Length: 325
Ligand SMILES: Cc1cc2nc3c(=O)[nH]c(=O)nc-3n(C[C@H](O)[C@H](O)[C@H](O)COP(=O)(O)OP(=O)(O)OC[C@H]3O[C@@H](n4cnc5c(N)ncnc54)[C@H](O)[C@@H]3O)c2cc1C
Image (cartoon, rainbow, N blue to C red; front, side, top):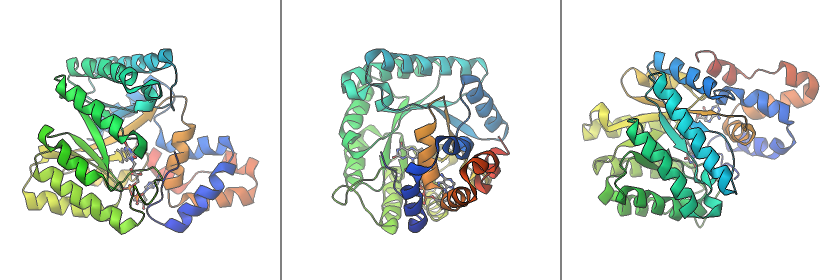
């Protein structure tokens, strides 16, 4: 599950190399800007804060792969509790979930049953469930599951397509008949050249082309990027197609480019991905690896002495990101 750096490749490379040696306490400290907190109450408070600022949310429960049925069921139950808590607070947030967290390792039927349970409750609550996309080996299983859910009459569910994958153009075509609700992102997983584009500009241009196809075919798209070049390109496509603001939304991760999110939210719907839970280590590591400033922060901390650094370090990006919510 190694993330890919698509900008500032040298710094990203350095961060990836040193990341395994970064002490867990430092990962937690630097990564705290990217998560709402450990508890459901933290998530609810975060979503409420975002809403006050005119931002929507999709809530993700942190955790890595689950490989027993009880575990998968417990995660689904936690999603149901999250849904109830959001409803009780009058917060119309969406949910984002990962197949691996709901037992895809045990089989897509197991995972499908748990996800359907969440989707059914979300439907009753007037909410929406996004099935996150994991590495390339899971795309077939995830899209098949999505199609089954749709065939079963569940419309309040969406998928994710990754612009770095060569196959995504064909997936857009194959899904078109369903007019899918798609989150489009670059894709965070390191994939071999046979499966994925390796060049930053190719990934960007694929993103723009997929976005144009999806929107032109009437799909609702969650445009999930912090890349200003792509945001500008997306605005151009939206303008060219003459779309109203109900046809798409921008999506960003909590703690990343909150300045850009706020700016966009003046005229467009913007949804923030809000992860919470006690198992934030792997998620924090992924975000740190994508932060172009992180290599410098880590290096500074390492050279300054780790113990001192863990207590005192506060990256500019993280500090900026936590301040408003
Ligand atoms: C809402 C949302 C949901 C996602 N869901 C999935 C998914 O289901 N599957 C999947 O594979 N990937 C997912 N991703 C991750 C995505 O694929 C990219 O890995 C990630 O968004 C970085 O790509 P980027 O387009 O923002 O461009 P980048 O070029 O990586 O980033 C653009 C700029 O954003 C800023 N930035 C980016 N990351 C950070 C950071 N961590 N800290 C500080 N600044 C940062 C920097 O200024 C950087 O130059 C999701 C992303 C978002 C926003």
